[in-house]
Image (tube, rainbow, N blue to C red; front, side):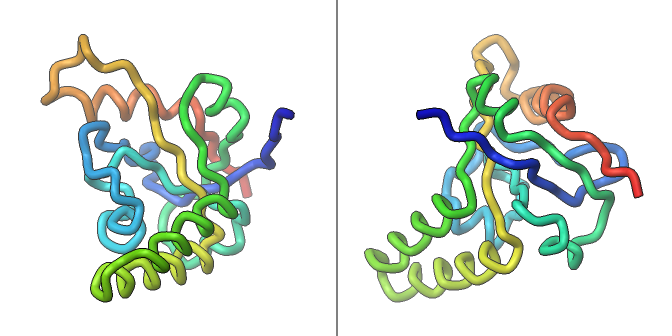
Length: 145
């Protein structure tokens, strides 16, 4: 059974989507609560453009099916919420507090995650973030008002 996803949205810089750090921390709680896309291999997107109105920047849209078709990973909002529930249920008290905060933020923004799966063995480590910047832009289009 093939799952198809509706258009998702992101608010970001007018010059383009903030690149992920492919060598960054894969902690989704830290991504949601602290880094907001910096220092992680993830890009946050939302199921609902109205739920991200509180973020600044230009509104972009993306098609998760295209992302998945190019062999990247997409974690839908419901999957992300299930993973955060699991983290809350199995974590220490301190980790649970961060996971609860992440759950609240992800719930409010109807957040989903893209985990980029680029083959970077021929890209120098110091060049990887810039390389990713240029290679993720094709997945996002500005939403015209």
